[in-house]
Length: 190
Image 1 (cartoon, one colour):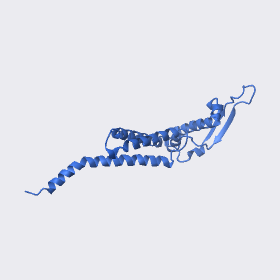
Image 2 (cartoon, helix red, strand yellow):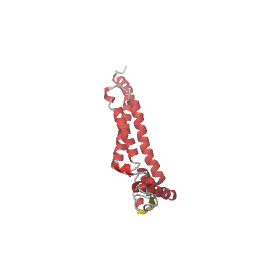
Image 3 (cartoon, helix red, strand yellow):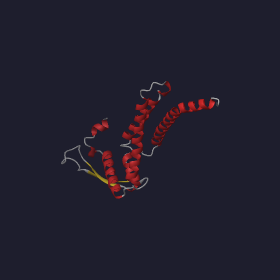
Image 4 (cartoon, one colour):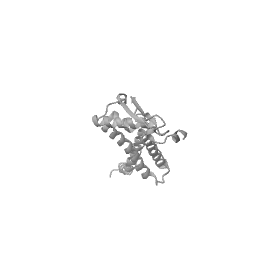
């Protein structure tokens, strides 16, 4: 909190200025290369930005500091996907995340009011997986973690839960028909 208290404006902080400059570079790059530049494309970037001098009056201290930086990371999963995989990759990545959060909401609502003992675990698990997805998406706004294993584990758990529950629902629908078929087969022919 002490460090944050020293930042009067975003353009006086080198970290914030670097991120904004890299994001601007990424946007300009993707406008010319809509399918992205591949993994680690950030290594070709060269960003230039100014850091404002807010500590002193303009006539008392040095002027704004001009900084030129090369090969700066994206510092955002969204811009990481955009720069490396372009618009198609960003769209697919967002679709996976939004779809996962939406499916967990559907499952949570479907199982929330069920009172069968063997199904009480479903709604809390779906809520937990959805919360993890949302936390990941918010956290990845300022950290380049688009390809971290956590993302794949979270997505697999969501897919596994959804598939398992769909299979259980299908089996419960066919159970009465199977019982009738067995009863007919068990009756002696007349």
